[in-house]
Image (cartoon, rainbow, N blue to C red):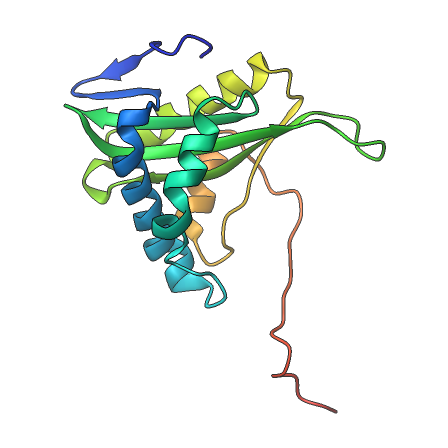
Length: 171
């Protein structure tokens, strides 16, 4: 998706690269993701982060070749988004990795294959920038997200286990 105007459409919704005019809708979509996902699963996440820092982060990502910002647009209204990033490999793991940082589709549009279209565009972009691996993280308690990503080609690699400090019980 190197062309800013490259579009994939199905019905009324167009999946395309985000532009400056999409800032408010993109931030609102990010806020909805935080509220619905992290806000119900991780009390350590600041659900106000997208509103406070999202506009600046969005603007910085528009011209960054290592970031991908997509919107699902219905008649000028953002009904979903995807944010991705790519990073060079390291000496330990010498492969360029594309990370699907966040994705959200409004509930009313979730049966319209929009999420799959966003992921397809992300994977195409990842290959086009030379990534050898694509990854995404989902909360273990979000079975629907895990099943969605597995249907779209992702598989489990690692499990992160946590315990809140200060709440440990001594033997």
